[in-house]
Image (tube, rainbow, N blue to C red; front, side):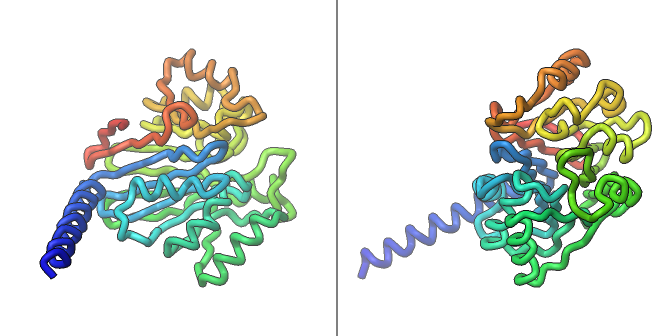
Length: 286
């Protein structure tokens, strides 16, 4: 009996210690922006100062789950906001696994479909879980209770009609893709998904300085040009990339970053890239 009681007390102590450690670790009153290492794809996790959980894209498989478990307390099983930038497998497959383990309260994407099995499975699961899908275009935004703002910079309705006149994503030409501005205090980050030059031009006009820029399309040479990179003038650039057959990131894009002396990190070399932002907009990279 004494052994059972002692074991129970030890287990309770360990549980309390783990709970306390995770509570203070994941509720520090700061904004956390994590570019998850999901291989060749995009998966971004954001935890707001008040502990709201946001996902932008989910990678090509279930790798995003490891990232979530590393940056969320074990008892938190809700995702308040989920965003899919566009319906390509390397950005949306992980959502299928997320839906099995987490309660997603709001799912947001562009009004463009894809005639693939993965797309059908994902949207069937969203329907089965009674999750409303919000279709976003330029100007739509969310303002969270702790001061974090998430604004859709693109695509505009006109750009979507031009690039996907049938309502399906265009695989051979430029295509619409959610371009998202995350702001907190004086901090601004732009999440670009697989945007290309024309899509970014549709989203912004002229100088648009940011602290953090996600380099579009895993560093593809079609995602940026020198003019756009100078308009953004990021203090830090992040490339979400893994082993691939496409030559990402391209020497052209890396050359632009080096020429403009912009510091960049790559998930294939640096692993998860975690950026922590305080209420004044100052940030550091872990």
